[in-house]
Image 1 (spheres, rainbow, N blue to C red):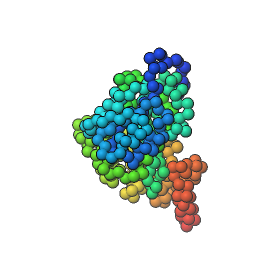
Image 2 (cartoon, rainbow, N blue to C red):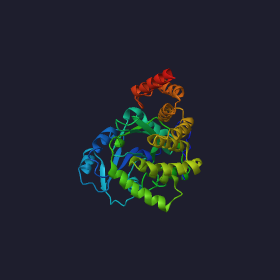
Image 3 (cartoon, rainbow, N blue to C red):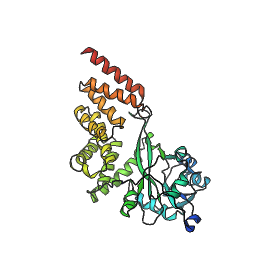
Image 4 (cartoon, rainbow, N blue to C red):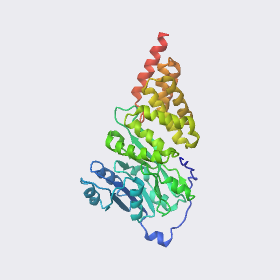
Length: 348
Protein backbone atom coordinates (compact mmCIF):
# COMPACT_ATOMS: atom_id res chain seq x y z
CA UNK A 1 0.00 0.00 0.00
CA UNK A 2 0.95 3.68 -0.18
CA UNK A 3 2.00 4.93 3.22
CA UNK A 4 0.17 8.15 4.14
CA UNK A 5 2.28 10.69 5.95
CA UNK A 6 0.70 11.79 9.23
CA UNK A 7 2.36 15.09 10.01
CA UNK A 8 3.16 15.97 13.56
CA UNK A 9 2.76 19.46 14.92
CA UNK A 10 5.29 21.89 13.53
CA UNK A 11 6.03 23.13 17.02
CA UNK A 12 9.56 22.55 18.25
CA UNK A 13 10.21 21.33 21.74
CA UNK A 14 13.32 22.40 23.60
CA UNK A 15 15.58 19.65 24.85
CA UNK A 16 19.27 19.31 25.53
CA UNK A 17 21.18 16.61 23.64
CA UNK A 18 22.75 13.91 25.77
CA UNK A 19 26.51 13.68 26.19
CA UNK A 20 26.69 10.80 23.70
CA UNK A 21 24.77 12.88 21.17
CA UNK A 22 27.10 15.85 21.69
CA UNK A 23 30.02 13.66 20.72
CA UNK A 24 28.37 12.70 17.42
CA UNK A 25 28.32 14.88 14.31
CA UNK A 26 24.87 16.37 13.84
CA UNK A 27 24.19 15.79 10.14
CA UNK A 28 25.51 13.23 7.66
CA UNK A 29 24.91 13.51 3.93
CA UNK A 30 24.32 10.06 2.45
CA UNK A 31 24.51 9.49 -1.31
CA UNK A 32 24.76 6.61 -3.75
CA UNK A 33 26.40 7.39 -7.08
CA UNK A 34 27.54 5.89 -10.34
CA UNK A 35 29.13 7.87 -13.20
CA UNK A 36 27.79 11.21 -11.94
CA UNK A 37 30.73 13.51 -12.81
CA UNK A 38 28.32 15.71 -14.79
CA UNK A 39 26.28 16.54 -11.69
CA UNK A 40 28.21 15.76 -8.54
CA UNK A 41 30.37 18.85 -8.13
CA UNK A 42 27.39 21.24 -8.17
CA UNK A 43 25.59 18.98 -5.71
CA UNK A 44 28.43 18.84 -3.19
CA UNK A 45 29.18 22.54 -3.62
CA UNK A 46 25.61 23.29 -2.58
CA UNK A 47 25.66 21.19 0.59
CA UNK A 48 29.19 20.67 1.92
CA UNK A 49 29.01 23.63 4.31
CA UNK A 50 25.64 22.48 5.69
CA UNK A 51 26.58 18.93 6.70
CA UNK A 52 29.18 17.61 9.14
CA UNK A 53 29.99 14.44 7.21
CA UNK A 54 29.55 13.24 3.62
CA UNK A 55 29.13 9.53 2.90
CA UNK A 56 29.29 8.62 -0.79
CA UNK A 57 28.68 5.01 -1.79
CA UNK A 58 29.95 4.43 -5.32
CA UNK A 59 28.34 1.47 -7.09
CA UNK A 60 30.79 1.21 -9.99
CA UNK A 61 31.74 4.57 -11.50
CA UNK A 62 34.13 4.57 -14.43
CA UNK A 63 34.44 8.36 -14.61
CA UNK A 64 35.77 11.00 -12.19
CA UNK A 65 32.86 10.71 -9.73
CA UNK A 66 34.95 9.35 -6.84
CA UNK A 67 37.71 11.93 -7.38
CA UNK A 68 35.20 14.78 -7.22
CA UNK A 69 33.71 13.43 -4.01
CA UNK A 70 37.12 13.06 -2.39
CA UNK A 71 38.04 16.60 -3.38
CA UNK A 72 35.10 17.87 -1.34
CA UNK A 73 36.13 15.84 1.67
CA UNK A 74 33.61 13.05 1.29
CA UNK A 75 34.26 9.53 2.54
CA UNK A 76 33.95 7.33 -0.53
CA UNK A 77 33.08 3.64 -0.25
CA UNK A 78 32.93 1.27 -3.20
CA UNK A 79 29.99 -1.09 -3.16
CA UNK A 80 28.90 -3.87 -5.51
CA UNK A 81 25.66 -2.96 -7.28
CA UNK A 82 22.93 -5.52 -6.59
CA UNK A 83 20.19 -3.94 -8.70
CA UNK A 84 18.59 -2.66 -5.50
CA UNK A 85 18.58 1.03 -4.58
CA UNK A 86 17.34 0.47 -1.03
CA UNK A 87 20.16 -1.99 -0.34
CA UNK A 88 22.78 0.52 -1.51
CA UNK A 89 21.24 3.40 0.43
CA UNK A 90 21.08 1.29 3.57
CA UNK A 91 24.78 0.58 3.19
CA UNK A 92 25.39 4.34 3.28
CA UNK A 93 23.28 4.58 6.46
CA UNK A 94 25.41 1.89 8.11
CA UNK A 95 28.50 4.02 7.47
CA UNK A 96 27.08 7.35 8.67
CA UNK A 97 27.99 8.71 12.11
CA UNK A 98 25.63 11.70 12.30
CA UNK A 99 22.55 11.96 14.48
CA UNK A 100 20.57 12.97 11.40
CA UNK A 101 20.73 11.85 7.76
CA UNK A 102 20.27 14.04 4.69
CA UNK A 103 19.53 12.18 1.45
CA UNK A 104 20.55 13.81 -1.83
CA UNK A 105 20.98 12.47 -5.33
CA UNK A 106 23.83 13.65 -7.52
CA UNK A 107 21.54 15.59 -9.86
CA UNK A 108 20.11 17.56 -6.94
CA UNK A 109 21.23 20.70 -5.12
CA UNK A 110 20.53 21.74 -1.55
CA UNK A 111 18.94 25.19 -1.23
CA UNK A 112 21.02 26.61 1.60
CA UNK A 113 19.04 29.87 1.61
CA UNK A 114 15.95 27.95 2.73
CA UNK A 115 17.89 26.14 5.46
CA UNK A 116 18.77 28.95 7.86
CA UNK A 117 18.72 27.70 11.43
CA UNK A 118 18.72 24.05 10.41
CA UNK A 119 21.14 22.87 13.15
CA UNK A 120 18.95 24.39 15.84
CA UNK A 121 15.82 22.83 14.36
CA UNK A 122 17.38 19.38 14.17
CA UNK A 123 18.70 19.61 17.71
CA UNK A 124 15.37 20.68 19.19
CA UNK A 125 12.65 18.93 17.19
CA UNK A 126 10.84 15.85 18.46
CA UNK A 127 10.17 14.66 14.90
CA UNK A 128 11.90 11.61 13.47
CA UNK A 129 11.62 12.58 9.82
CA UNK A 130 11.25 15.91 8.02
CA UNK A 131 9.46 16.52 4.74
CA UNK A 132 11.50 18.56 2.26
CA UNK A 133 10.09 20.03 -0.94
CA UNK A 134 11.91 18.49 -3.91
CA UNK A 135 11.55 20.92 -6.81
CA UNK A 136 11.67 18.92 -10.05
CA UNK A 137 12.79 21.26 -12.83
CA UNK A 138 11.40 20.33 -16.24
CA UNK A 139 12.86 20.79 -19.75
CA UNK A 140 12.51 24.30 -21.16
CA UNK A 141 9.96 23.21 -23.76
CA UNK A 142 7.72 21.54 -21.18
CA UNK A 143 4.30 22.86 -20.20
CA UNK A 144 5.52 23.81 -16.72
CA UNK A 145 8.85 24.97 -15.34
CA UNK A 146 8.81 22.74 -12.28
CA UNK A 147 6.68 20.66 -9.96
CA UNK A 148 7.25 20.26 -6.21
CA UNK A 149 7.10 16.92 -4.46
CA UNK A 150 7.27 16.59 -0.63
CA UNK A 151 9.66 13.80 0.40
CA UNK A 152 11.24 12.66 3.65
CA UNK A 153 14.86 13.60 3.01
CA UNK A 154 15.94 14.35 6.60
CA UNK A 155 15.54 11.70 9.31
CA UNK A 156 17.15 10.46 12.49
CA UNK A 157 20.01 8.01 12.11
CA UNK A 158 18.45 5.06 13.90
CA UNK A 159 19.06 1.39 13.04
CA UNK A 160 15.32 0.80 12.81
CA UNK A 161 14.93 3.36 9.98
CA UNK A 162 15.88 1.74 6.69
CA UNK A 163 14.97 2.23 3.04
CA UNK A 164 12.52 -0.07 1.31
CA UNK A 165 11.95 -0.69 -2.41
CA UNK A 166 14.43 -1.79 -5.05
CA UNK A 167 13.74 1.40 -7.04
CA UNK A 168 12.09 4.68 -5.95
CA UNK A 169 13.07 3.61 -2.47
CA UNK A 170 11.28 5.11 0.54
CA UNK A 171 12.27 5.74 4.15
CA UNK A 172 8.84 6.91 5.40
CA UNK A 173 7.26 3.44 5.77
CA UNK A 174 10.06 2.35 8.09
CA UNK A 175 9.75 5.51 10.20
CA UNK A 176 5.99 5.17 10.50
CA UNK A 177 6.08 1.47 11.27
CA UNK A 178 8.15 2.34 14.32
CA UNK A 179 5.68 5.05 15.40
CA UNK A 180 7.95 7.86 14.22
CA UNK A 181 6.70 11.40 13.63
CA UNK A 182 7.10 13.18 10.31
CA UNK A 183 7.15 16.97 10.26
CA UNK A 184 6.60 19.55 7.54
CA UNK A 185 9.25 22.14 6.72
CA UNK A 186 10.14 24.95 4.32
CA UNK A 187 13.37 23.22 3.31
CA UNK A 188 14.03 22.89 -0.41
CA UNK A 189 16.02 20.64 -2.76
CA UNK A 190 16.37 21.43 -6.47
CA UNK A 191 16.27 18.40 -8.77
CA UNK A 192 17.65 19.05 -12.26
CA UNK A 193 17.79 15.54 -13.70
CA UNK A 194 14.43 15.83 -15.48
CA UNK A 195 15.85 18.64 -17.61
CA UNK A 196 17.74 15.98 -19.52
CA UNK A 197 15.91 13.01 -20.98
CA UNK A 198 18.00 10.19 -19.51
CA UNK A 199 16.36 7.21 -21.16
CA UNK A 200 19.01 4.73 -20.04
CA UNK A 201 18.25 5.37 -16.35
CA UNK A 202 14.52 5.23 -17.03
CA UNK A 203 14.91 1.89 -18.85
CA UNK A 204 16.93 0.52 -15.94
CA UNK A 205 14.25 1.62 -13.50
CA UNK A 206 11.52 0.19 -15.73
CA UNK A 207 13.07 -3.29 -15.61
CA UNK A 208 13.29 -3.26 -11.82
CA UNK A 209 9.76 -1.87 -11.41
CA UNK A 210 8.29 -4.46 -13.77
CA UNK A 211 9.86 -7.25 -11.76
CA UNK A 212 8.66 -5.75 -8.48
CA UNK A 213 5.14 -5.29 -9.83
CA UNK A 214 5.01 -8.95 -10.91
CA UNK A 215 6.17 -10.13 -7.50
CA UNK A 216 4.05 -7.70 -5.50
CA UNK A 217 0.95 -6.68 -7.51
CA UNK A 218 -0.60 -5.33 -4.31
CA UNK A 219 2.17 -2.70 -4.00
CA UNK A 220 0.48 0.47 -5.24
CA UNK A 221 3.59 2.63 -4.91
CA UNK A 222 5.50 0.35 -7.30
CA UNK A 223 2.67 0.34 -9.82
CA UNK A 224 2.33 4.12 -9.56
CA UNK A 225 6.06 4.57 -10.22
CA UNK A 226 5.88 2.03 -13.05
CA UNK A 227 3.20 4.18 -14.72
CA UNK A 228 5.28 7.34 -14.21
CA UNK A 229 8.31 5.65 -15.76
CA UNK A 230 6.26 4.46 -18.73
CA UNK A 231 5.04 8.03 -19.22
CA UNK A 232 8.62 9.34 -19.09
CA UNK A 233 9.61 6.83 -21.78
CA UNK A 234 6.70 7.81 -24.04
CA UNK A 235 4.75 4.60 -23.39
CA UNK A 236 1.65 6.68 -22.83
CA UNK A 237 -1.02 4.06 -23.41
CA UNK A 238 0.55 1.68 -20.93
CA UNK A 239 0.99 4.49 -18.41
CA UNK A 240 -2.62 5.56 -18.82
CA UNK A 241 -3.90 2.01 -18.34
CA UNK A 242 -1.97 1.55 -15.08
CA UNK A 243 -2.99 4.95 -13.71
CA UNK A 244 -6.62 4.37 -14.72
CA UNK A 245 -6.73 0.95 -13.06
CA UNK A 246 -5.54 2.52 -9.80
CA UNK A 247 -7.94 5.47 -10.17
CA UNK A 248 -10.94 3.23 -10.82
CA UNK A 249 -10.30 0.60 -8.17
CA UNK A 250 -7.81 1.69 -5.51
CA UNK A 251 -7.67 5.47 -5.35
CA UNK A 252 -8.81 5.44 -1.70
CA UNK A 253 -5.61 3.58 -0.77
CA UNK A 254 -3.40 6.45 -1.92
CA UNK A 255 -2.51 9.40 0.26
CA UNK A 256 -4.00 12.70 -0.89
CA UNK A 257 -0.82 14.01 -2.56
CA UNK A 258 -0.40 10.90 -4.69
CA UNK A 259 -4.10 10.76 -5.59
CA UNK A 260 -3.96 14.41 -6.68
CA UNK A 261 -0.87 13.76 -8.81
CA UNK A 262 -2.34 10.59 -10.30
CA UNK A 263 -5.39 12.48 -11.56
CA UNK A 264 -3.10 15.20 -12.90
CA UNK A 265 -0.99 12.62 -14.78
CA UNK A 266 -4.14 11.14 -16.28
CA UNK A 267 -5.26 14.60 -17.37
CA UNK A 268 -1.91 15.14 -19.09
CA UNK A 269 -2.09 11.78 -20.86
CA UNK A 270 -5.68 12.30 -21.99
CA UNK A 271 -4.88 15.79 -23.30
CA UNK A 272 -1.96 14.39 -25.32
CA UNK A 273 -4.48 12.11 -27.07
CA UNK A 274 -7.01 14.94 -27.60
CA UNK A 275 -9.45 13.24 -25.22
CA UNK A 276 -10.70 16.57 -23.91
CA UNK A 277 -13.73 15.38 -21.92
CA UNK A 278 -11.55 12.91 -20.03
CA UNK A 279 -8.95 15.65 -19.52
CA UNK A 280 -11.60 17.83 -17.89
CA UNK A 281 -12.81 14.97 -15.69
CA UNK A 282 -9.37 14.14 -14.30
CA UNK A 283 -8.14 17.74 -14.08
CA UNK A 284 -11.27 18.65 -12.10
CA UNK A 285 -10.56 15.86 -9.65
CA UNK A 286 -6.94 16.93 -9.20
CA UNK A 287 -7.73 20.65 -8.93
CA UNK A 288 -10.60 19.88 -6.56
CA UNK A 289 -8.14 18.23 -4.18
CA UNK A 290 -5.74 21.18 -4.26
CA UNK A 291 -6.84 24.63 -5.43
CA UNK A 292 -3.19 25.69 -5.61
CA UNK A 293 -2.37 23.09 -8.26
CA UNK A 294 -1.89 25.48 -11.16
CA UNK A 295 -0.91 22.75 -13.62
CA UNK A 296 -4.21 20.92 -13.13
CA UNK A 297 -6.07 24.20 -13.53
CA UNK A 298 -4.03 24.94 -16.66
CA UNK A 299 -4.86 21.53 -18.15
CA UNK A 300 -8.50 22.10 -17.31
CA UNK A 301 -8.41 25.49 -19.06
CA UNK A 302 -6.93 24.06 -22.25
CA UNK A 303 -9.47 21.25 -22.41
CA UNK A 304 -12.31 23.72 -21.81
CA UNK A 305 -11.14 25.78 -24.81
CA UNK A 306 -11.21 22.71 -27.05
CA UNK A 307 -14.71 21.76 -25.86
CA UNK A 308 -16.18 25.19 -26.54
CA UNK A 309 -16.22 26.36 -22.90
CA UNK A 310 -14.28 29.54 -23.50
CA UNK A 311 -15.81 31.55 -20.67
CA UNK A 312 -15.04 28.82 -18.17
CA UNK A 313 -11.52 28.51 -19.56
CA UNK A 314 -10.98 32.26 -19.26
CA UNK A 315 -12.09 32.25 -15.62
CA UNK A 316 -9.54 29.57 -14.79
CA UNK A 317 -6.79 31.29 -16.76
CA UNK A 318 -7.44 34.61 -15.05
CA UNK A 319 -7.29 32.83 -11.71
CA UNK A 320 -3.88 31.44 -12.67
CA UNK A 321 -2.69 34.97 -13.46
CA UNK A 322 -4.02 36.21 -10.14
CA UNK A 323 -2.10 33.48 -8.35
CA UNK A 324 1.03 34.90 -10.05
CA UNK A 325 2.68 31.50 -10.41
CA UNK A 326 4.81 32.36 -13.44
CA UNK A 327 7.59 30.49 -11.68
CA UNK A 328 5.60 27.37 -12.61
CA UNK A 329 3.74 28.38 -15.81
CA UNK A 330 4.91 31.08 -18.20
CA UNK A 331 2.65 34.13 -17.89
CA UNK A 332 2.88 34.79 -21.64
CA UNK A 333 1.45 31.33 -22.40
CA UNK A 334 -1.50 32.01 -20.12
CA UNK A 335 -2.11 35.44 -21.69
CA UNK A 336 -2.07 33.91 -25.20
CA UNK A 337 -4.78 31.45 -24.19
CA UNK A 338 -6.85 34.26 -22.65
CA UNK A 339 -6.60 36.06 -26.00
CA UNK A 340 -7.85 32.92 -27.76
CA UNK A 341 -10.80 32.78 -25.38
CA UNK A 342 -11.68 36.43 -26.00
CA UNK A 343 -11.60 36.02 -29.78
CA UNK A 344 -13.71 32.88 -29.58
CA UNK A 345 -16.31 34.58 -27.37
CA UNK A 346 -16.43 37.64 -29.67
CA UNK A 347 -17.13 35.38 -32.65
CA UNK A 348 -20.15 33.78 -30.96
